[in-house]
Length: 477
Figure 1: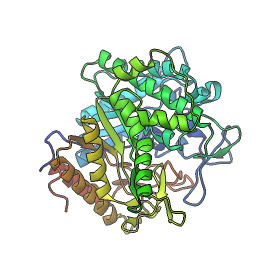
Figure 2 (figure 1 turned 180 degrees about the horizontal axis):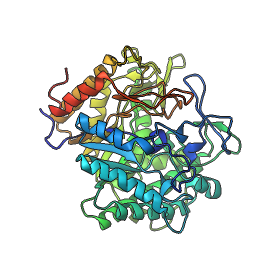
Figure 3 (figure 1 turned 90 degrees about the horizontal axis):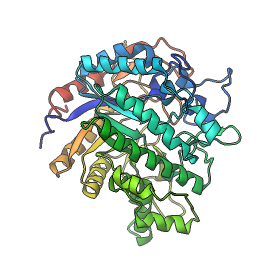
Figure 4 (figure 1 turned 120 degrees about the horizontal axis):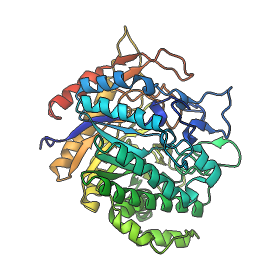
């Protein structure tokens, strides 16, 4: 079955990994600006103060802040129908709790959206993508505080009105389920540790973590309602980091463990944002783990009235879960588990599983019966320049297999809206802070230490993806 004629082919980037423009144009620092660079063996660290002797990759990124016209023109050459990008909250409200927005920041994104419109590229905007204003984290304890709900909704109100004529598709929180997975205390919730520590180290109790998640659920629901009120054409989605988990064996305990992991890691957030209420299995999990969250009487109504219009997610890999103690572990995008002996791995140890994408598409569509969209997918790899060219056949092969899986899911009845591969232009890796880990169709001359000319170079995958879009997914060779 061919892809729909209105299928949204494109790519995805995020402000905190590409934009740069640190503390310029009236902006102040976000929590993301406090993460130093790392690598595959060295974890990224959060520092309370910006140390001039350390390297913070987000401060420059790939300087999309100054290169956006050049980059958008290259996306247009590939034939993008849509570009997923994020707005930096601290560029609109530098402290997060300001009385009035920063007009310079509003105008910057307006110029970006006008550039996209010039090429008929539909923006898909993530409102909060791991870049909480640092002031909100430092003063209020991040999303532990219910006060952030109103700050966020005020921020959304500015966006929905300022860009009413340019943006119709919105995502409320990037990979909101990293909190249920235990990876997002600092970067996603802005719950700061007492001392400088590794980026993914827990900094909150279970009750604090799920309290923060509850506040984000409420903020998201209120944003959905507001978006619809401001413009009836607005469509708002959730965004989930897909955690595809297989039982490592047919042992019943492995089957149950996989089910429990899928529920907590994926379906908790999907159920609340798509169905509008907490499922019973979550209430059981809270009771067994002595998790208490404070709610107010209107919360149930807010969640019920603010369900999303579509379900979007990132997909990179799958993993296995085992109740056996001697199983070999693996790690990936906001997940960890047991290595699957039937799968190959990337340079960073992420297991490559296009069949897992087909499986997940069927799972979420059959569960929620609303349109779905893949807003992150791709291969992080080491690219080599040979005679001024980058021959990335391995990336083409990875993407081709995943697009085949998408086509198969559509044929199975899944209402798939679009596909925006991650890092369509090379950008800073979130997990390691590296540039060496490249995803893009466009190479950016920037190194792990921040050196480089920032020159853009088309890879072989650039022309391949252009052909894919031109033929609406029919020519994948």
